[in-house]
Image 1 (tube, helix red, strand yellow):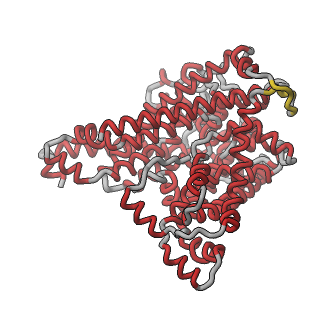
Image 2: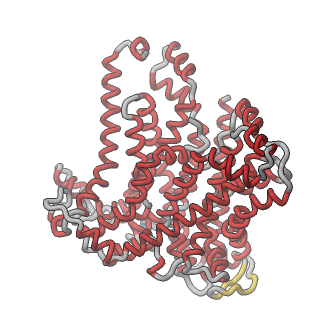
Image 3: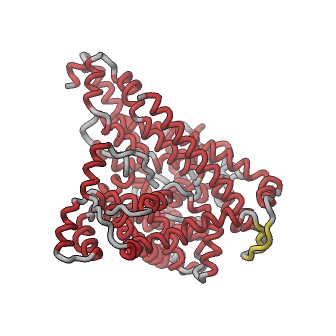
Length: 282
Length: 321
């Protein structure tokens, strides 16, 4: 098609060469630092200082062991996993319930409630940290993983309801009516019939909540005090102070923190892209 | 993170309405479904936001709330040293951050989206690679690049020296002149995939008939982009601008990792997020009142400007159609 639109195919070739140079060039800028992190984690600091860019001569996982055991990454990792998974499950469960009701039915105040939940997409909730701190303090939930889980779950609700209610809305009415005639209650219809049908949306919601919570630094920094409760990002700040001179271990720490996300990305690229472009359409 | 203003088309709406049950269940059932989310969201998100406003008018002594002090906390923000110097400086750094990100990150995102739209081959590969850094914690990205940019052992300077650009090698994060621009670039490195994906989705939404009609009328690729695609991308440009604005005025982790809690060197990378954190948790005995006042001002500014931007873009769209 493009041939009879542009008479000079030579210009197109030049343009496409230029485009490829740009795309591959930038891809290198993204990938090379990440490869360098892996390479440098596998060789001793001595070697890194002698030659910052290079391949390991005799690859060793010593730095990973050091980060995991000496720098407490085993503790941080467990905390991050526990807090993130619990928050995501809690937020997804309550959002599925509410999203179902708001997506399927019109009742008095349903529009207002939907707007109320969706407003959370725009609110910079970090700015509420002072009252939140006092609230959790009154509840005895400062320096407590449960406190952080409740806060995280709350922040995940707007996006989850936004996605889930629009998926529930698109399911055909006949399904629930047939079940209702058979005498099924609302919870049965929800759990047995509707929920399995929105599985793709659930995957998007879960993956898309997981990433920012795993990476969050602000809330654990403020809400958790004792180091044995810290998550990876907060632990990282102490780690970078203590292991300043041990670059090999620093690089290993960066990898340990990021690895679960890379695995998720490889498994769920589609969901991540769907979440990032939610509402724009295909 | 993702906010949508895209409206469903009429036809879609009608089709969707078909699936929605008309007879709503009794209110007890409705309440059982909605209450858990409602309570969690209200108690831990909405209520504290409102309380911030209320608290900003009170004096605090540590964790204890004292008497009503009117606008004194707000007044203190602009008169007490060192806040009176740090606050405006951090504000302008955020403005600079936003402009820099718009010019570099979002222009690159649009360029990549356009290049990838035209190419069939490797589209998915490049999209995946460019989006990859978004996954990494801002803190990890910051630490990673502070190692890369290290003046002694960092690969960036090493590579510059190796290719004969020794004069460009410098302590990027140690020099007040280059520290903030370096952080803006690193932040763009992390986020460029996001505008790219949004622009890609926007370009895919433009009907090919329009493009073909333009080709038949003899439009060059540039003219097609400038006069057809770019105007039709306005809604996406609007969303990207607003999200960039909100993101940049909340920037925290990456600056902490590269410049520390005080925005080193010499406050050259200090931003509002850091000032807010320091005011609340590293301030004096009355810190919570001051921090609440600062939260209110930041909220009004960020939310207000976002609304103005959305309105401006909607206005521009209307002028086009």
